[in-house]
Picture (tube, rainbow, N blue to C red):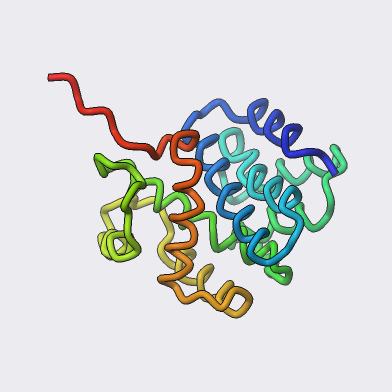
Length: 196
């Protein structure tokens, strides 16, 4: 099992975009928090969250790209099959069932982490004080963070609810709280006032 630091080095090798790296760090953070909640292997879950979009920058096309190239690379480097399965199953169009708890946690945290990040970016206080109510209000605005798949956010929360016992609102708050703990590293801290 490659270490978390080795996974991060791989992410940096494959991904130049700072925003995509931050997204992978955010998903890692949320998935790790769920591992802690469920008493699962935090390091393994963190690695799955970190590498889930490994090939997205290089091969974004769902028809023949992401996450297929990532999976090849991960297999060649000896990543465990359950991590690889989670990476495959987070891409809905791959048709890979989310049988394991890790699969469901990764899927539930992926789009939601991106959406919460977008919500934090438009607030002067960043993620500090961000509420579930505010996130849900933004989810109803199709033009806001239009690239985030609302169905994936909803389905992910529903699939995980049976495992976590958390309602949609509680799941959103759980992910907000997890990301808030690493706000500075994730670029979610308070915004500097614009120079006049």
